[in-house]
Image 1 (spheres, rainbow, N blue to C red):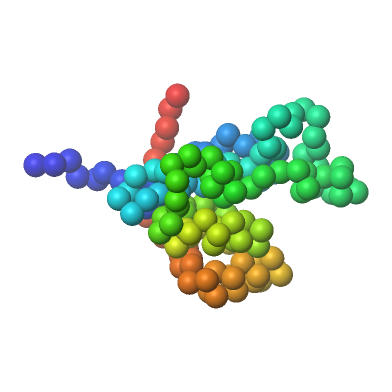
Image 2 (image 1 turned 60 degrees about the vertical axis):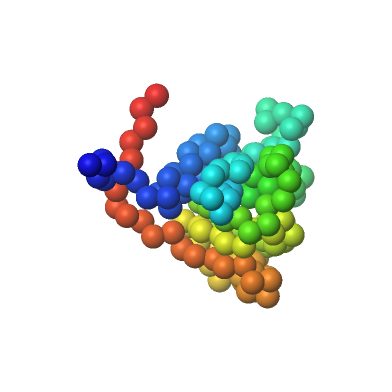
Length: 159
């Protein structure tokens, strides 16, 4: 008999996305993403942070202030990092698990990369202009977006 109680694919991939977000050094928002192929193999992961070569000691993490004194013009989002981290060719037809619903800029990259399904955990910016734009583009491009359904299972990782 096989073991019972093992985690589902959705729990596994969302867990990888959330764990990836733990690599983010952003003091306010940690977001992770995991791109998965049709065969349930992980293709790439990413988290929000500064581009390679841009020191997280020298660039700002602030959320408020003049634009160049905030993180917003500098941080690459988890979805974009996961897309850019992929080295295997096409992402056409893949799924993206992400801990926060994609912004409109990431939605463009997701569509262009050929990702067909987005499974998201939080949609805390629901109803904002950027969020509405993301959903409008996803709908127009035929990208399915689905809220992650929590199982209530606790998964503990000790390192």
